[in-house]
Image 1 (spheres, rainbow, N blue to C red):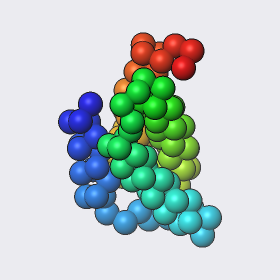
Image 2 (image 1 turned 120 degrees about the horizontal axis):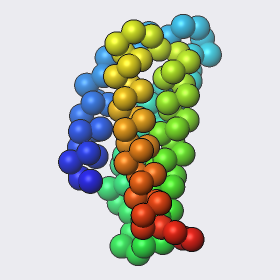
Image 3 (image 1 turned 90 degrees about the vertical axis):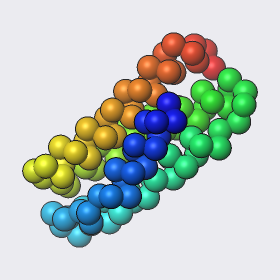
Image 4 (image 1 turned 30 degrees about the vertical axis):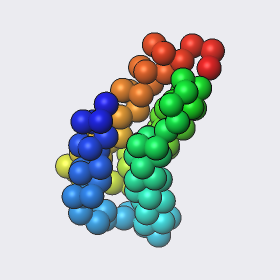
Length: 105
């Protein structure tokens, strides 16, 4: 899991400034990128309890889904494909952790 966190952080840091379709997209992209970065940072400081991890994973999945919506709407071409693959991959990974380890938590 640490490897995927590091990869996500590197991809986020290396991403060129996104081209926005309109003013709303410009704002939404900045918010999505900031939220994605904060989500990755939150994963690194999760508590040791199963409940803390499950709560953090749930927040991460929600953030990645919101970011995917923005990237899908506001980006195009290879940048869109790369960003969507990044957040959807992370969402899928942590959704699986939730399903397998957080039943009822």
